[in-house]
View 1 (cartoon, rainbow, N blue to C red):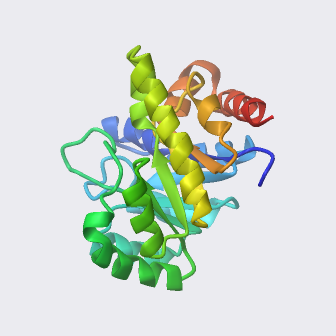
View 2: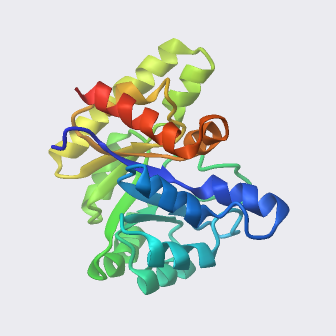
Length: 247
């Protein structure tokens, strides 16, 4: 166990701002390098099928520029598999994706597509990518992720964060307990446990305190906070909170 979970910084929404106007600024690769200099342990980027934020060129440039690992988020499509096999990023995180959603709304349905996903991730593993599956804190999905050969699961923390933001504290506490129990369960199967989605300064510490959680992936909040305090101070404050929780 590390002294604190690794912090992966998702730079998707730098690209969202760029794409709102077109052109080259702000550059998500510049943000990734700044996050790396600020001490981020990795960079996460989601190449969506509709290319609403990160572009193919962004992935090319991230692979060339980064010295920390790239966590490449992608849907389980043939196109994305080909892109991942061409670049061979450190990690590939398989996520659900619907065109109409604003952001990833839930975890991947692994149990229902177990055979297809097992065959899908096999070439990625053979290419040397660590395969992560983005799932809800649900025992059935975790067991399926283990059976198909994933090395890592990333638990979707969105329901917990939403309940906190909306003042539904009983729901928040139930969601947090499910995350705690399923982190321990996944770890008992030999899966490495990551967590992410919607985490903020107000919600990160209870999740960071779980001893099984080895990595937290945080993006939208940090990019938003960077508007007010700058990206480096925003990352440093998140790291401080994570370290305090684990201490």
